[in-house]
Length: 438
Image (cartoon, rainbow, N blue to C red; front, side, top):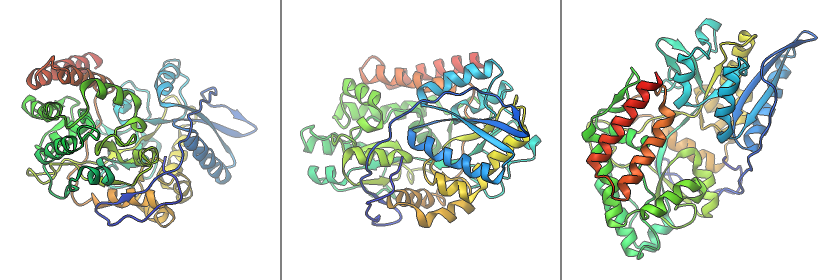
């Protein structure tokens, strides 16, 4: 979450400087029954989401604002942490007791849609998507039907610690034109200059980072048909970057990398002042900066000017969806419309779900953002002219791709696989799993 006070203005629009955020919200759990019922002429909707206690408080305020405008509707929140959310949603959906309005993650949207668990919002005459950012306005469409509406915009970025660069005696990179070779060289230089006390970068081997790399080469992680849409050679080249980082000491040792990854963003090399760079979602900046107790700088990814096209993309932060089994689909769609199009809702949510997907409400809330949130918003807005297109919804089984990549990359880092062997194994296991999931 992004705190709301005590920040310094960014130095420029292109590369905003993020100041320290205060505190981290504890995760809380809440359980209520799913489904809807009518009492005294009041329609009851159930709305499920995941997140920290900060998000829970925000959505309770949003619900109150909606109910004030719709006194004949009552919305009951079903919320939990990320780790519990998907098991609970799967169980409720299988039992025919899914919430009326469901927060969905991109990796699971097609899976729930293809299994008939989500309503086609077009058939419900809404919500209105006319003011949404064109880059993600149709990202919730699957096979000509609309199953989700993006709540906000997120992006993978390279975060850097200027203090670490200064301690290493290394200049900050020019993120307008740096290459992947530059990134590897800078990482190695920082580690060498500090005798490993500060590593150049956290390990970058994840499927979202590769998606940017593939897009830079005119390919993609997934295609419109849900299949893999990149060449094995491109994945091999991606794994070679990590191989070189391991060999030069530009990233932590394989054992350390496993431990760091398990600790999450607030145990990253940036958060613990043990590294100079790391690849993260931009909405994680506040928490990482708070843990680091330092100003961090947002950089564009390497390689954006290296080839014929750029690779960075806007990712829908989350989707709002309506259960196909809802007893009150019209009211549920009206609530989603409020979540997406109401300035009142946007003022309450602010940047908790990334940059608002609605361009009109995005503009309305900008003057009231904290300096940290404003820096993130300015960076994301500054990407608009360079982002070529969006990505199709991931296929069924995409959630397991994260685990497959982690296993393959770990084996490669420990020297059990070459980059060529790692790429071949990743492709084989993902194709087998996705095919079985369908």
